[in-house]
Image (tube, rainbow, N blue to C red; front, side, top):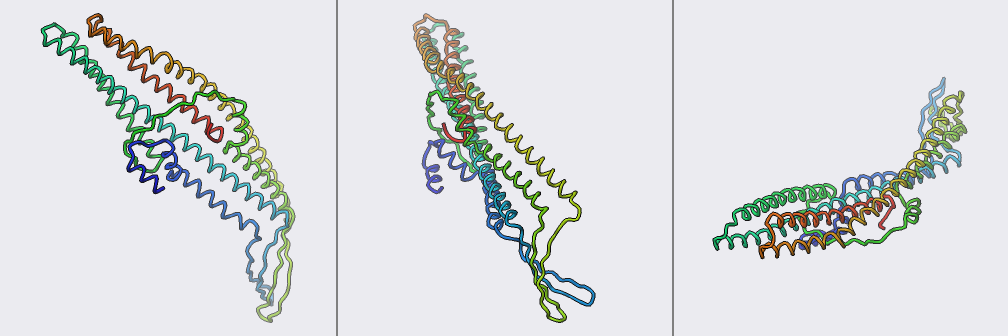
Length: 383
């Protein structure tokens, strides 16, 4: 943690992996889930033990007894209780891991937003510099006495539009940083995001689903929940069998000691039967929740996968075709305007097309990255 903070202080570039590590260490939601996990772990040892001995005072006619005894449940009930706490421990462990995956996904999304608006700012500054050069060229032409008022005014308006875009992107960038800081529970200053490269591989959806079915922590948590509910039902059935309470009685007047055995047997079984039915219904409900969740998450995973294929094709189209052509057209338009073969308005339209195309290229990249982060959250780990 200390090394990470030092690297943050002395480096302009902050990598995504460093931000994720910071979130895992500092995020308040993760800390809360970790404390819940510790709370359940503290119950595990005590689940092996019978109840604490009870000290009782019995006053009867002409007799007063001081008793000490301990309630000893039947072995199967004690074992069921131990296994139930074990299931609860597993459930909280998986919920804890699910929360980590959720926070990682959200951190990635805000980091990608920050990266995107950083790129938009960079592109806008690039366009403003380009327009300023054309403006300088126009001013030189104006000095020579040529009538270029319309060209000069047109380029001035376009520069002002770009400056307005720059202000908007700056605000959006700060908003993304604020959202990121809220997850990190740490005040990051503006930083330079790393250049993100996309691995354009096509994943096998069937393999991803198989991994999801065995690794998704939310699904595993609900599997443990079903096991817990089943053991609660078993415990309710076992409550019909009386626990034994061996006890030593001391007559406070005579000092005579006696040994006694107590049994708690319900006279009316209606309450116990109702309790068993309640626990059985709760068990079945949790089972259906688990099955429904599995179907829903699998459906979400397939939907995200096909969205990924569509977004990936759009990204490739911009990367390999649209963006290179827009850049080439802009260079031709710039040269043609300088030589007087192209009208200023056509040049400005060409510049706008390049500006929008380059921004759409990075938007398509971030769209793919965000879908990947969602797939990873459901799958239960990185692709």
